[in-house]
Amino acid sequence: MTQWLFPPAPTPSLPIVGEPRRFPVRRILCVGQNYAAHAREMGADPNKPAPFFFAKPADALVVDGADPAYPSATANLHHEVELVVAVGEGGTIAGWAVGVDLTRRDLQAEAKAKGRPWEAGKAFDQSAPCGALTLGALPEADAVIELTVNGETRQSGRLSDMIWDPAGILAKASELWSLQPGDLIFTGTPEGVGPLVPGDRVEARIDGLAPLRFTVKP
Image (cartoon, rainbow, N blue to C red):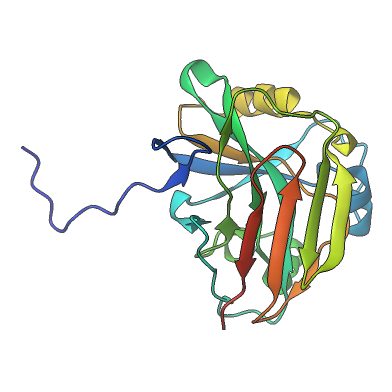
């Protein structure tokens, strides 16, 4: 029997729509600037030849209706609604969820300007709120993806606006990593990213999937 110096942290997991079972999360990969309009609003070229990836720790997940806290060391927290792909056995897509990539935009911009990694801007605690997982095929390939803050629409697009579709993203990620059951991939965000402040009520939705709702805590 393995003896631990201290008790291991619990395994992060997502609830599954209509099931008592949960989806154990191994790691989180994220695709940057995968919608042309968002790439342009961030000052990038939407015609790049391949997607690029960054990562968040699995314990950055915020699930089961919990509310993330406004993070330290930033004055410019941004929302980014995303389709989340859940990898199952055999490296295939097991299911889908609605996620929000929370970003300390000021720290990310500083890192970009200095050619440094993005972890401080992207991979902080509670930076990956995610809704319940829907197993099986994506309900609608052309589904609306949308985010509102305090009832006001901030982001709205369609999944078909993605530069790289989920199958293409999975294929490219598989060239870089050995994808395993439990991996999540946040697939990029449409235009309209913007700031959040404590007390903001966020609702993110994609047609056919369980919505994600949370309030930013002080």
